[in-house]
Amino acid sequence: MDITEVIELMSIVDSMDNISEITVTLGDTPSVNIKKASSPSLLPPDKGFQSASTFTARPTNNLATPGQVKFALDLATKIGNGNMSTVVNGLAHSLELTVDEILHPDSWPEQMTKEHASLYLDILEAQYKKMQKGAWG
Image (tube, rainbow, N blue to C red):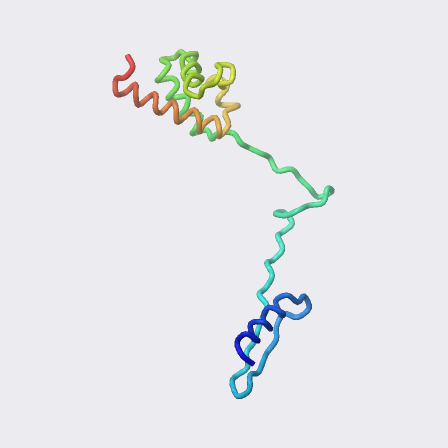
């Protein structure tokens, strides 16, 4: 038996459902053990599909962390000097949105999502850095 026959035998064993391992003896040489690779284990019930009777919805908590909210509010307070309307206007201008599409800082503790925090913090940090360098008056 040559190597191509062994490879062919390996592919046959791999394609079979009821045979997972065979041993082949090649003349005077030692025997070769061909073992089918183990199939991936099944997912635990909480990771895969569930029946309707056992399904429990997982909460989708996409709210920003308290640290993100505090950092954003601190930056907004410093940039706006207490006037949050200017902060909302600045965010709207930077994000090319209307003022109504910007979440007002008064509602950030309860409604700010991780996406809001990601967008707003980048802009607020950049504006604050400009302010520190004296670019704003």
